[in-house]
Amino acid sequence: MNRSIVHMDLDTFFVSCERKKNSELTGRPIIIGGGDRGVVASCSYETRFFGVRSAMPIKMALRLCPEAMVIKGDMDMYLNMSQLVTEVIRDKVPVMEKASIDEFYLDLSGMDKFFGCYKWTQEVAQAVTDNTGLPISFALSTNKTVAKIGTGESKPVGKLEVKEKDVQPFLNPLSIKKIPMVGNETFQLLSRLGVRTIETLSQTPPDVLQQLIGKNGTVLWKKANGIDETPVMQYSERKSISTEDTFSQDTIDVFAVRSILSGMVEKLCYQLREEKWLTSTVVVKIRYSNFDTETKQCRIPHTSADHTLLKYVLELFNKLYTRRIRIRMVGVKFTNLVHGCHQMNLFEDTEEQISLYQAMDKIKNRFGTNSVCRASGLIR
Image (cartoon, rainbow, N blue to C red; front, side):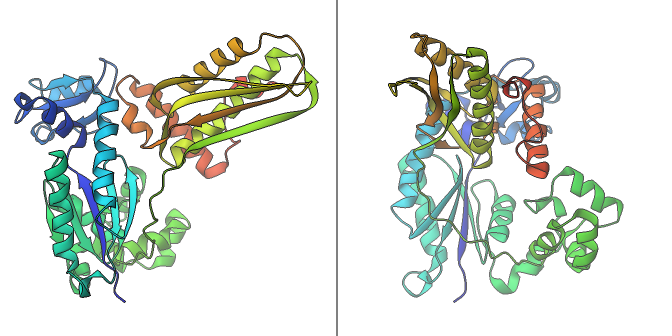
């Protein structure tokens, strides 16, 4: 059976939400972000015309487009709208994967004999717009990679179908930057070798690519040749993420306990970012030597940042630990999770802070979760 995979992407999602709330913003150049030292979380097509891009420093964006209006952003509104879109799509398709706050994959394989996959996808996209007022683009093809590239090529408010026989002609003239896994470093490396289009990349021997960029070389070659067997994973809401540490000996060393909590938070936050979750509720648990167990929690703005969550965890611990008897176990739990990534949280963060997390996560991905960590989490 031929696969029928759809990629759907809400067009300039944050900007579209703001325009839905305030119609006077329609047609105006908009930047979503915060602070002079912050970065662009999202921007309208009117600003992109001047070269403004996501993750660009706000100051640089305003130099490129001085007339742009900067809006801090309303994460709660964006999350609520994303949930509404999710419910509309989930009610209409057999298998849906929510890739991020504004991205969805659908597996409609086998549906052609009932309805027609392209027509079905059109009706799903129309239902999203009718129920939410938000514009959405989509591409239908044989796998995730081609569908995602197709959506990017069809925007804004695009509707594209790339049939199996058309996959390679569609991909060949495009820049290798269009392939999702090609970052700037890989692009620069391959460009120096004259590999700039997907056609050239598809003709490069996979063993050569593997020598150049490691095990991902073969994967990259497959994607350039329109091969991607990655399944669409059925969407389900994860409720929480947590960890606990039972000590070998009960302790009243508050300094050591805080260090342990710091290490817990850092590992949980890394897991949140890897799995693309944000949390809005922090829970700290203590079990004393007499097995009495107490917990305390608080609601916070959605985030996956270590420095933000660690502050709340330590505050809760200080409020919770008042009995001054030995502690047997401590635990941290993050609940009320929603799909998203740290890029959603750019309204308050500085460019330096975001770059730091990206660099740390990159090191952990390559060398392991314990390869780099906060000094406060090392003291025992």
